[in-house]
Length: 161
Image (cartoon, rainbow, N blue to C red; front, side, top):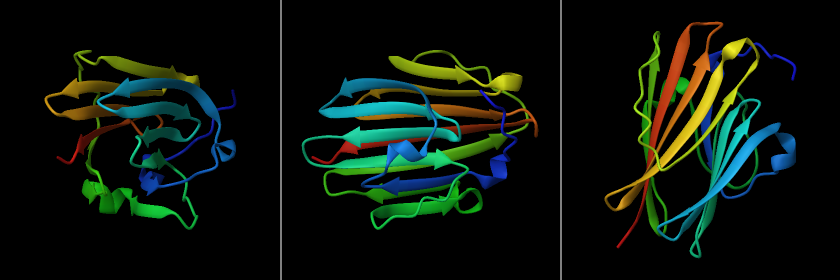
């Protein structure tokens, strides 16, 4: 795999109801079924994609150094705009929070499911998923060792009663 020098400052969050996965370098994937949702986790050359799918709706979360352009965008935010976002979908409440640190946090592996990829030069992307009370909690780590930055995200998705 060829190393691509990217900056964490170029990260952006996009939620969209459709995406062509052929436009991404899919490095690793895993499918999980929890609480009526099927989650497909992808680690991509640019960061991560999570496909949330239920009998009610389907959408993709793309967190990458790439601007996504299509007619189905639900939310698009740059890193500066991002720190905390939430979105009310027809059947779900979705929230996203972000933290940029200069040192890695020691994480307890308390996830029910996880997916990790180590890039050249030891940068890492990892995704952890667990069922927590009545919602699904997702945590990710994206390390940008060329800038000594560690990007942690926390996502929650919960079915609206």
